[in-house]
Amino acid sequence: MELGGGGRGGGDRVRRQLQSVGRLAAYLGGGFLLLSATSSVAVRALRAISDANQRKFAKPCGACEGKGSYSCRLCRGSATIEWSPMHDPVFVNPCLCPTCDGTRVQRCLNCLGNGYA
Ligand SMILES: [Zn+2]
Ligand SMILES: [Zn+2]
Image (cartoon, rainbow, N blue to C red; front, side, top):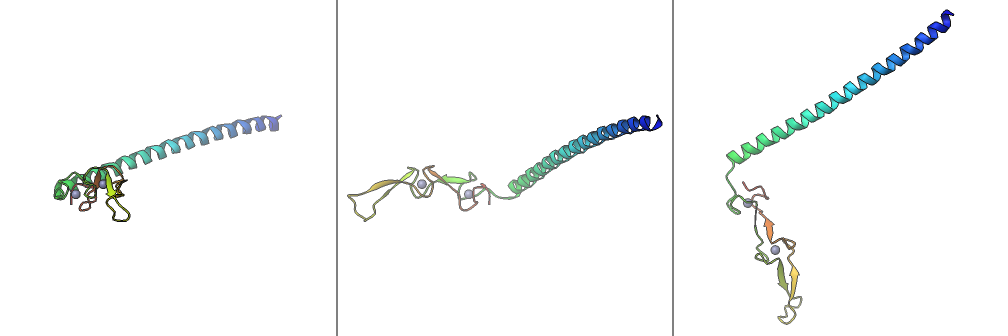
């Protein structure tokens, strides 16, 4: 009698332990999520601060006037270049500009697209 009762009690205890383990896992998981969310927010905030500092102390790039890009110098904004393989003026092919890939703007080489040097 006592053994059976003890067994039932043990089962209850195991179930209760499992429940508490599950609760602990949920708690830890929630904590981890919160922690990772907090750290990513902190990282973002730090990055924003360092970005702001850089912007504050760095001069805007003179080559692109702080835009980070300027109109492509190879195609001069037409997105294509006239390329003749034989230097033959008769066979001039309009080609997609290899520098800007047809976007008509190229990244500023002076500031690497940041807009400030
Ligand atoms: Zn171009
Ligand atoms: Zn620039």
